[in-house]
Structures are given as C-alpha cells and as structure tokens.
Image 1 (cartoon, rainbow, N blue to C red):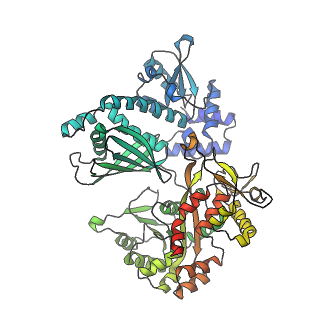
Image 2 (tube, one colour):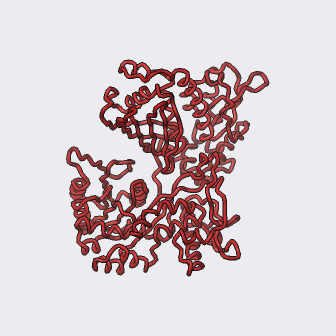
Image 3 (cartoon, one colour):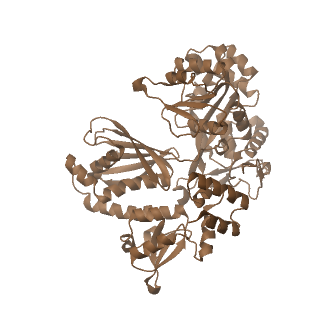
Length: 616
C-alpha cells in the first residue's frame, strides 16, 4: 500500500491534518514502518477512526467485536494460523447468500490478502473492517481452541522421557503452536512474565500482568516434557540436562514487535519449571510525562537531570519501575552534544545514541569496574544500574564531584532512607551532602479500568488510611485536589467529575487536569468521590488495566543538607525535606486516588513497607 494514497484518504476524511500527516509520513519512511502503524503507535490517531476511514473509502462495514466461539471450524481448517496473523485476516462466518464467507480484515486496502484467502477457502469473500486488537484476540482464541482440543486428544499418555521421543513430540504441530500461542497471548495481555509450572496431573501456565500472577492456560501432564523441550530448543539450551538450572534467550516477532525473551529453567520435584521474562525491544521509550507525575515532581526531576554534575538517585523495591524512570530521564536529555554511558544488569532496552554496557560478573565486569572504565571515556552523563556496595558508591561520588552527572538506583523504602543507606555503605556525610542532588522514591500501583470502575463516596476511614490529618481535613483535601489537578498526562483520562474540562499543558499534546474537576465538593460534608474496581472483559475481570507510578521527591536543599551533616536519622531528614513541600509516597498515592486513577487498596498495598518501617 502506498503511504501517500493512505495519507490522502486520512487527510480527506479529517482523520489527520496536513502537519500531522507530513511529519508522520517522513518518520514512517525513515523507520521503515507502515504509515497506519506509526500513526496508531504514536497515538496521533485512534485506531478505530483510522480503520473506519479506510473502510468507508472502499465501501465496507465496520465490526466492533468478533464472536470467536462462533467461528466455524471448517473455515479455520482451511486457513493456516501464520497466514491469518501475517495478513491480519480471519474468516468469521458463512453468509446465507451464495455461500459467501465474511472475512474480518484490519487493512481494507490489502486486496492481495483477500485474493489469497479466496483461493484458500474456495469461496467468494466479503470483507468487514475491525481493529488490530480485535482480530488478534479472535485469532488467538480460535486457534488456541483448536490446538487445545488436539492436545486433549493425545495428552492422556505417560510422561515422555527419552531424548529421541522428546524431539519427535516437539516437532508435532499442536505442541509448537501451543507454545507459540503462549507468546502471542502474553503480549496481547501485556504480561511481563510467563510461568510454566508442573503439577501432579497437569501443566499450568500463569502470566504476570500488572504485577500480579494470573492463571491463563493448562495442558495435560503428559505434555510437560515436550513443552519444556520446545522452549529449550528455541532458547538454545540443552534439552537433555534436567538436573541443573539453565538460562537462555529467545527473540520473537509478535504483532509486529521484536520481543526479547529471557528464559530461566530450574529443576523441581515434579519436573522442570520455566519462567520467561518478556522485553519489547521496539517499545517506544516512555517519556517522563507518561509516568503519572504531578507537575511539581516532574518539574523538579527535569531540573535535576539537566544539571551538569551531581548524583540523582531513584529508590524503591525490585519491580517498582526505577529503570523505566531512568530510561525516561535519559530519553529526555539524549542529544548529540552529550556523551551518555550506562552500565546495567541486564541491558533491558537498547537506547539509540547511548553507549550501554552489561555487567558480567564471571569475567570481573561489575558495576564498579564498569563505572571506573567509563570515567576514561569522556562522559557527560553516566547511568549505573544499581549502587549496592561501597566501591560503586565511592566511585559514583567522585565522578559527580569531578563534573559528571550520575543517575542510579538504590533499594530503600523511601527517599530519606537513601541517605542512611549510603552512610551504611561507608560514605561520609559531607560527601553525600556535597554530591547528592535529589532522591526520587517510587512505587507502581495498578490503574483502575476506566470502562468498569465504580464511583463511591469516600469515608473518613479511607482518608485516615491514606494518611490525611483529620484535624486539617479540609486543608489537606484541598491540597490533594490541587496536586491531582496538575497530574501530567499525554492523553487525558476521563476526570472523576463528569463534564470537567481539560486544559493544554504544552505544545506536545501533553495535558494537565483542570482544577475545576476537583474543586467542588461532592456532598455537604465535602467528601471526595473515589473509585473501586469491578471487572469486565476489557480488563480481564480484574478491575485494573495497566500500572502507573506514585512518587516522593526529596531535594537536597539547605534544611536537608544540614540534617545530613548533623548525622540525623532518616525520619529527621524526612521532616526537613517536608518543610519545602515534599509529599510522602502515600500522600502522592492519595493524589492518584482523588484523580480517579487508582484505588485506596492499591495505594495501601504499595506503601505497606513504608508503614512497617515507620512502626519500627
């Protein structure tokens, strides 16, 4: 399909303007991707509007949903799954008149695919337009149903143990398709990990979605060995070795994306267990404005990462999004004028224009040795994956004092605890106060599904749980409303108050919530409106879809610097930081609750460790 022809259609139908189209065509040609894919990926155009415009152009209808369980098996038998996925087509029903097959398509202009499908089916076809996500869901569901039926027919036998038999069984199409379907469905459901676990009578597959493990698939126990063998073969591992843990990698192209899969196998009493971590190598790097900051914290972070020297730390437990925040920061300051180097374990995403080194402890390449080597590479900015010992911390301190900006992470519960952690590593207080610029503590909370979330009147207990002072309730609520009103978004979600307006923030379509959405109390007592999860098809009946950050930004200003030099404890340092407006993690979580983004329960779960530390 010619980019210019598609562009003319979208322009004539008002889907894009001339400026947007010109920029998109140039960028799509430069990256070698389809114009339609680029427009959707960059959120320039909603996919539904784009598909409807193309459908109108060729005179076909648009379909909202596909009833996958109603697709006739006789049609699926005639169409290979690879053809359906590659061309984004799926026969969905036989129409009464003239034995015509209705075919779902995402690209109504792809006439070659329709011609090939007509030949495969041996019948005339009638296209109907659908979104890519809709057809992907249907393809996965339809072919998964077919493959699981095949597994059930053959899976009642004993475990297969002989090497030759393993190879033979792994070459069977149902097993290959079943394993491949794990990757397709996991990407479709935004999973970060796939767990394949042996049970007494079956094989269970769980996906980690938005930080929670969810059971998704099962297979007969007799297929454990060939399933594990298939994964090992793809990862380049030894399928005969079952007594020792093994690590490997798989690269997959799924839904047009290159996915890097980190594979880990470990022996279990009941058989080998596999965990696969999924990393989208072509993921559009998140900008800081996509991470859910309030304007105050975002402004402070952007100020710090543009400083010529010093140390900026991001803290939090494993899986709290620290690396994503650092990548977003590097993405903002990555210009040809700066030499940016990173040492990571592992390198999760490749950043264009940035030198990235991966730690390899077996050959002595550690964070400390990598950082020391970087100082001879004339860097402007250095990112260290983690500061975990005195040597790394000491080199980072000296690098910052000699004219370099250093970004790194620490494992602490809150921002103030980073100071005591550095002291525990043997760093002197005067070194910390002279080199440290700021500390950002963060957690991830699940976002409420906007299609099914349910409003309710907040209770005093809710407000107390969120850390609000009852004696100053009105003042604290007003401050939270103001903070929620400055939540920075690239695409504004529906505000909690109906018909509230959204105001422009800058010229890159970034927006902030209008204060009018939060300024008016919702009842006579001035209690705000909160939301709770319900569950629907869109969110997999969890009530949540996606995650977003809550933050605690501590600047190393004069009050904090004096507290550090006086060797005060973390709570005293925290009180000093709050003099200049620092919000604690739970208070920032309350901002996201008031903004209608997450629930009280999510904030409490994410900040529980901070409470435990406070109680101690």
